[in-house]
Image (cartoon, rainbow, N blue to C red; front, top):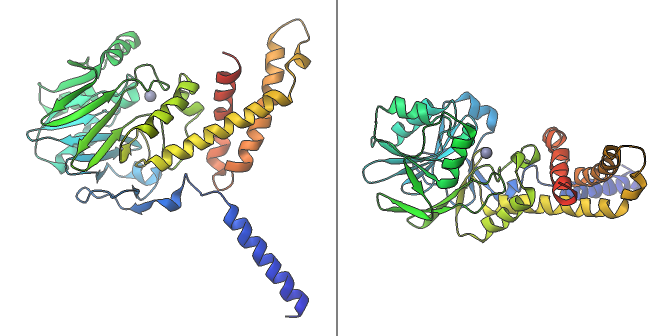
Length: 340
Ligand SMILES: [Zn+2]
């Protein structure tokens, strides 16, 4: 190797290593987490997640990860629930549709105690539409169904055939010695969405559905958040609450690092949109007989501009998901910030 070739090699190596160091993490902040196979017996330590992706999770009936002495994360084909084993019986938070039997099977592998309570997080039937099957299959006619007044009202207004709540909850309630703190104020996803905090020994478990989806970019339009600005404020509220590990509706266990990633992602979207709003001139588009074109022309310019900046920062390493959801994320905040 002559001197020039050696020099070229060194320069190339430095460039390669620099480029590598600048790459965004493949997922949220993967390197911060510890990935292990799901364990129904050993509680996950801080920042521990469950190995494997959604394809593997679709191929097995369920996965169970213990989170504390009495609380378990149960995942059934990409839908997650919380199981709390009390002194006499079991409480379940959420009952995803078409997964009732597997959830009962999972509970039966954790404990011989009977299920006596199901809690609804919100009225979306994909997360609670399995309650009827669970009631039937369990053979227990005395299972209590807990929900806030807002969830109960939504179920009526949606005209869903999901079993109606039997106990209305508001600030919190006791289940066999465990206090479940109820927070009905994080309502960006839906006006009835409810999050729960369970203190168990030295761990606090948060159950928060359809807000943060660890290890992936968010679903389209941030899971169709009914109010993206409120949704963004909800993330701030999640950060200010005291908890150790989060059971989310989908994908892996969540930590504050996952919430922070999403907060930064949204802050970037808003910054890029802000730049787009000032770069392009709305009045340039005011022409023609009909107003629709004005809005559309401006919208396309601003969204394409912000989407391009977002892609530069977040697309690399996650191209397939970014190409499906990235633009919808920009659009959600465009509508929320500019016009509705
Ligand atoms: Zn939902």
